[in-house]
Length: 303
View 1: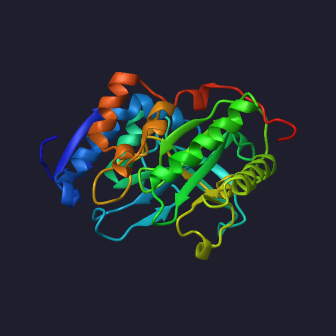
View 2: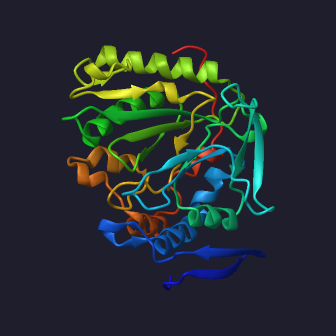
């Protein structure tokens, strides 16, 4: 994208004004706001199905990854009138409600990228059924010296359990230091059910592999272990979306993986993917995470 102070564009009938396209967002990598917009535009066919209908928390970096950032749940009041919002009751909001942004189309995604919303954090539920998650998420967080390689080992243990009970699971990198395993439901469920189920599995893994897995949130116990964060299964939380950039020194991406890749990982760099890598992967493999929004599964009554 050419360097420019401001550029007027039309995207699928929506008019947008893009600004400061040459502003460095990832200075160490020479990755500008124009590059951010270009990445999200090109990855949109794979990304949009995972955002549609979901309340989105913005994580904005106005001065790039080296500057301060802020989270924004309330969709900005200066949004174009065609940006969809979803009103959600929240006891944590000052007036008891939040009007989240909802990304339904490419123009909204580009508008957010122009706001330097580098990271996209979406709800596990659709706005129309905010109390009913469509997926169970396991956030695997390594405590140094453990790395994403140890997370891959835990992810494989989770897959074995879900294979045993006849459910499919999908793995992705967090784009940062860990991994996530998603188990699609897309059938009626509550957060009480998914949270309790995820907690029980985390405890089971800890009993089986006490030297590798931790199910407690106590940071003092995390050294050398993988914390299986089951608490992400809450209506009050959002999780970094698949295909989202992460705000690190390099423009890394939360990237869907094949289970063969998870099994083959022996070095942390084996599971690090940058924006250009992800665009190549999508071109070659399509959306490896498509099953998360397409597959219908039900929680077992007992583990």
